[in-house]
Length: 315
Ligand code: SF4
Ligand code: SF4
Ligand code: SF4
Image (cartoon, rainbow, N blue to C red; front, side, top):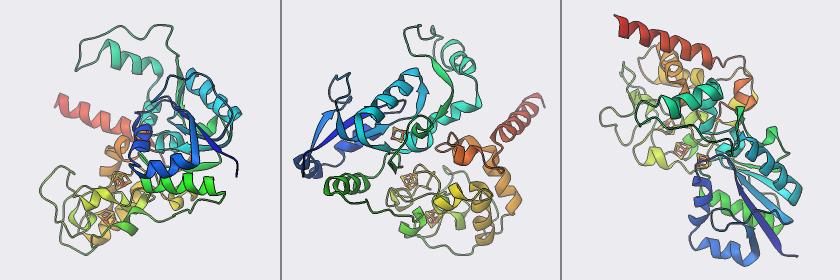
């Protein structure tokens, strides 16, 4: 087999996916024996795009630079992998779609409530596009590898499958499938904030009134959060059922489960999830698979939450 070459590119993101390569630890040696990484912005200052067998692209399309870089990766690579939830779904930067670029610049630079106001970026910085989108809005993608970042096990499996010339194994389970906690009926009657109290270590978070998104999140992580006492926040993105069925929705699916397990009224769970919708939909709201759903009304939910907040301040 001829040598497998890899180009890596980094669009608008936090760099966590790039660092995840290092998390392969000694397994990276197995990968490096079989491939040649020839472009890797986190390690080397390479501006051009040599031809490569595989292109790993992390990050969302947020500005003109991202669009240009994604197109260059598509032109130079035989296989393009959307790597991480930002590339696959738009990621946390998708929360910016609720505001205009001018509003974002104003809030971040000119009227930042927690730091000294600063001049906005100069004209030399690539301007923000009007919305954040996943990379498949700009280029064709051959393989989707969500996760924030994807667990090293999934990165390793994907890279070795490509090196061996086979299809990577695809796991369609939700995070619950890997979680050891027990779903059981309880008398819990109130929704809890995820930073409140001391959760039982054996029982499902939903049974205790905590919002855990494991049942609506695809497993690309082997469920570390519930194993370590923290509810899942859905960072790997929604399950295939949520993504592909127009009327299945994150908030109603969670509300159905939690209301069956506890004595909390279903509608109040739905309302609670809508009030924190920027958090609960934060990884996937930029993908058309979520924001085109007839059930998704994030601007309305946020306007209602803001109106409630203003009314509380004036009272
Ligand atoms: S998917 Fe997560 S870890 Fe990867 S770049 Fe985006 S925010 Fe960072
Ligand atoms: S909802 Fe959360 S705590 Fe409950 S089983 Fe699923 S992942 Fe585990
Ligand atoms: S358990 Fe949930 S929040 Fe934690 S890494 Fe997995 S998908 Fe992300």
